[in-house]
Image 1: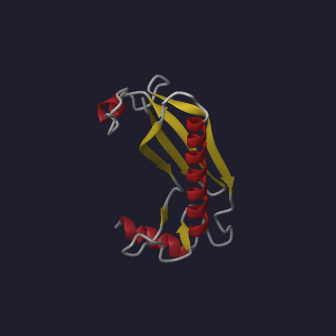
Image 2: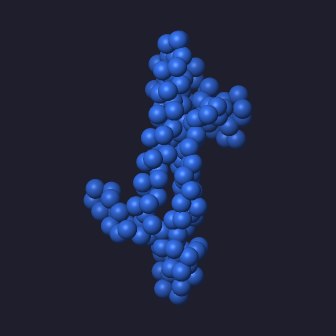
Length: 153
């Protein structure tokens, strides 16, 4: 039977990490979707619903924000996210390869946590239009404050 895996990705200003969690809410072999009723009833994800998979995590230290301008180095963050996810998937594959059982895994959900109060402009293909994005909590420049006020109106 395949294990249902949730990947949690946290992209921050000093590190990016990815952790694999096993989801126990829908223990069928043909799991296609996470049961939203389980999630809504158990918003805190009790240990019986989701458990961290031992040894299935990866963290990369980065310096993603320029302290003088508050600019986020978008390509650096995206590259670190790719590397973290690739490493966690590789760890999942290696645990599958090292077991004699037929247990596999299936990624059933992704969760993201990112910087607070940021904007990244993207083109029609979803690619960043600049190498940097402004992180308003790290940059208190007058033009950032005016832009935030305009967005609120």
